Length: 158
Image (tube, rainbow, N blue to C red; front, side, top):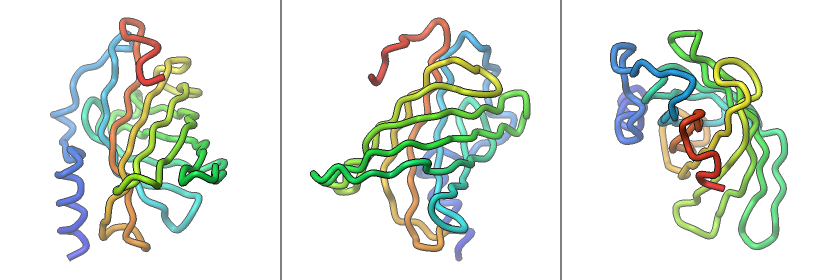
């Protein structure tokens, strides 16, 4: 049953893809990813999956979490995208706000690729908090990651 829940969550998030579905991307292009992540074995460690222009797995950690006091939380996190094609893997440092006043809660994070493929390029990520079966606490985060290439708008999402 957990596997079925994972498959349904990934399908709804657009995260199911095969290696043959990943497009041939170059460093100058905007890279569009879908992702679903959750905390495992627990906070602050994140795991998950990515699809879209890069197919693979997601890892990372929340580095800072500070309640702002108005129902929002300031976040700083390390995102790791590990492509099935290892040459398309990267690490990004992102920060922004999660708005817990909305139902479901949403977040917008911006940052930069700090290591690996596309190092130095700006990153824009968004997610929505959803219910899921793969996380021990049944809470997942699903959304998009956009790496803005040389031909893209460096200010998008800021």
